[in-house]
Length: 189
Image (cartoon, rainbow, N blue to C red):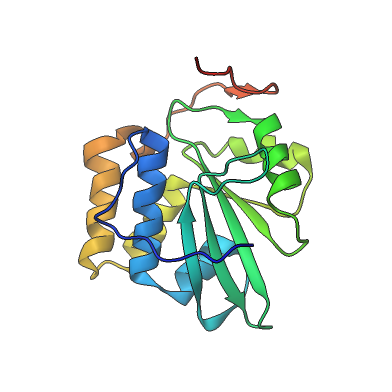
């Protein structure tokens, strides 16, 4: 994987909701630079200073995950965690997830972290049957941040940003029917 840098929290140029949201989350991960948070996100034991770089809107050969985190494991191996973020109105596209796995998650130890507001999306990902796919809800991430970074002003502001200002539907996930498309999203004009 190409070298990734850090993300400046004040230079968010993205206008799309998901891109903007992902950028802000990656900026928080970069700012906190916390091993336990990175282990929570990657599901892997990491070195003491694991964060090697981040990138918003990672471009694969024919797939474009919302971001990527480069980490170092305890065994001193590079671990790339690609991120696919979905917000309240965005369905999971099984075709998109499979493309990310095929074109970006090329190494067996690399991961694709899918983050959505819907717990039921995990069963959709389980149907794919690839152990490289990790799943978290935004609510689980907010709970983790509240429990572990309650004295960190930036972390508490991110939680507030998610819960109260822009993305109210992530705060309390409503029971909705599964919104899944097995085909690719429609092409924008």
